[in-house]
Amino acid sequence: MKNYQVAFLAMMILAQTTWAYVPGGVNFQGRIIKPTGEPLEASSVVFTLKVMDPTVNDCLLYEETQTLNMSNSDGVFNLVVGQGSRTSNDPGKSVSAVFSNSSTPLTGLTCLGGVTAYTPSAGDIRKIRAVFNDGTQTVTLGSDFEVRSVPYAMYAQSLQGKTPSNFVQTSANITQSNVESVFSHFTELMDIVTGSSNLYMRSGSGAQSLSGTYTFSGGISAPDPTVGSNVATKSYSDSKIAGRDADLTGLADGMVIKWNGAQSKFIVATVSGGGGGSVTAVTAASPLVSSGGASPEISLESGTATSQVLYWNGAAWTKQYLKTSDLKNTLGQAQLPSCTNKQTLSWNSGTDKYD
Image (tube, rainbow, N blue to C red):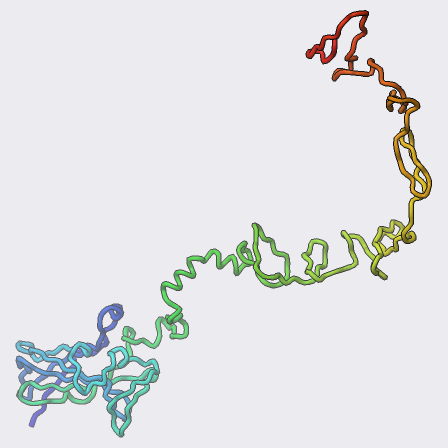
């Protein structure tokens, strides 16, 4: 009995640049010749396509069916693995996962010897097993067909020589939105890296300049100062007062600190003098007088006659009677003029005196 003859025209992986947007698959093409030498041109041919692992375990990774009308086809068929209907035997893996060599185990499989998993390795092939039924009989298309990696594979091992470890991979935190948010502050980030940011202070030694007003809610730790322009901590002390040397040896209650010009430094000193006492004498200058005695008092001098006043004559205080000529207005003029018999006084507000 003669068998069907199958000539495979092409078998290639369809992924290319469209894989990220539309389902990919394996393009499976050939020509079927019946034992009679005629091409298969049945109106309904059911193809069952299986993807098997490369090991002796013969694990079924994928299974689907596709129905073609091969009328007037001259026996030529064109199938894309991944675009058919899954069968009940299919383990439910995606086409990309089936052809991936990412070392991620594929579990829940049907294999020989009771094995249920397959772990791909770099460079692993896949086998395609094809069966068709033209309505008269079911035929297996020869032996399995190997699918190897090609430059435009659905799951490439590298990209222009770069392996997955050479790329930043996305995660829950590393997303396009988060990356754009971070790098929208690229200039500020570079200022921080180079130490030129005026928004933050870098740790470490060395002088740093800050501008503007800064409010700190907590304490600021600082080392002990080494030069006069350094900030000092709360408990820091040294041998300086206002930048000058100070020798505080022997400082105790009741003592004072005084400047010693001969030694060019502040020194400790004791206040001289006894304890309590009393005033026994007070010296007073005219027109003040002191009563003297154990409890002296100071008072004004008494006049020599009734109605005398103390009068400053320009050189000293004297005791005398107040005369009308001593009354002056705001201009220093006599307020009371000299009068003759029976004359009267009249106030002149313009001259601030009597006329």
